[in-house]
Image (cartoon, rainbow, N blue to C red; front, side, top):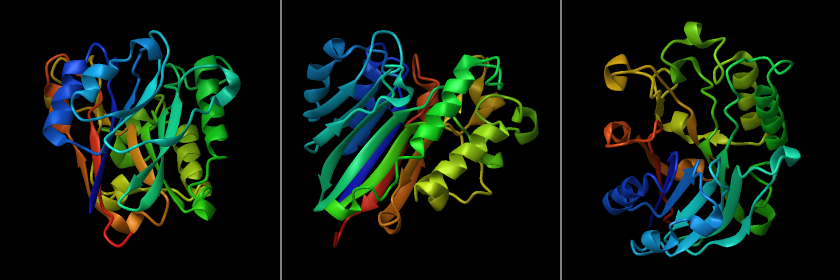
Length: 272
């Protein structure tokens, strides 16, 4: 009774629809969560994706910016869209799926990148990011356990929290995505919400993990200046059911790629 889930910042779902199709046909996860779809709901390529067997799609998009989607083989229940920071952008969507008898709330996030200057006093984008993280602390992994619902949180969280989540800890301490105020905030969010970092459960913290490589590098693979900006977390009850985490690094080398790559989590739901 296997259950699989993937998360991917696609950086425009319509532009990179061929890559989405390639991934779904080759990997066939039960659920694919996309971020930065950059597509209003009315223009989302629903029919093309449904032809691949993914009948259940929940979207929260806007023209040209942000946007998140849950693409699923399994029916989606109780879809929710939280508007963080009262700005009206489309950075969250969630839904409940039934995975072999276990009900799971899937949260899909696209956290603000935060701009270039890590000072909230002079950079409104960074202030927005910190406020967004603070509001995320209200989201506890056990919020629906009384109703028999577990939780998984995925997405582009735009923060690489550990020293081994970036190519150079010292050189990136003043670079947005790895500054202490961000990394400490994300780790605090994990702790207060009872979330388990499944990627680091499966891959020891001593090992490097990257999920993003800048477009600015002439040879991204040779330079290998990556960061782990994409995450998969869960409530504590799902942690023992994790069987594998895989970062599809090769996707960064596909034609017209996203600067992020997909991350997969595989669970064994036997006896759920």
